[in-house]
Image (cartoon, rainbow over all chains, first blue to last red; front, side, top):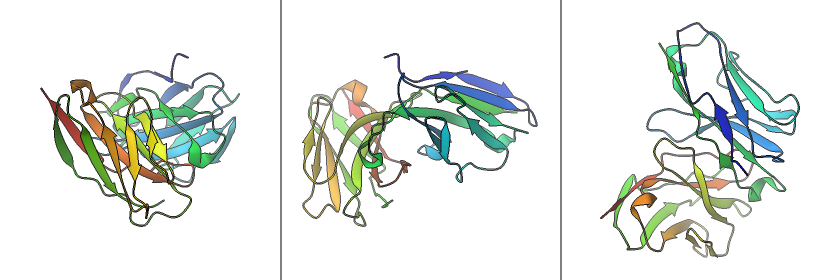
Length: 116
Length: 108
């Protein structure tokens, strides 16, 4: 068990550029979550997958945000046409979920995005 | 999910018990109480969760009142490495709704 891995740890980009983050969950975990955290706030839920199916995406912040998990293993989060307000920590978490209400999430260390 | 209320910050002396309160007066019957913590520059870490009964694991104890409107996380012997932001979350569906949590400072 190597934990949830996120890449890159830090990303600096210019406004208007596209960025993509990768998350590798714990092996055999079927659920994968994306969260965003801004300074001084708790993490904010964005979207989640069960295997390759994206079951909730209504809380993605805008249509510039999209996520995929094509083979039910790793996932990517893409932000198109980045804005300065997108600067935040993007966290990924995974779980082996039997019941939604009795589920432990394991988080990665996040990708810190800075939009200049 | 029910809303939670936590103190903004707390201090605790190293070696003493840290008792972190959480109010969740609007909790419904099938919502679990979860606790996570976040050490600076790391992702949140699961600590413990419970529904009605008190729970204990190697990290902490969770005491839930009989009416389930509040709970307390207990770190029995706090160490400097327990300095972190502690989040109390009441969860029914898929998303954990983190608030601002309690910033716990453990002092020597």
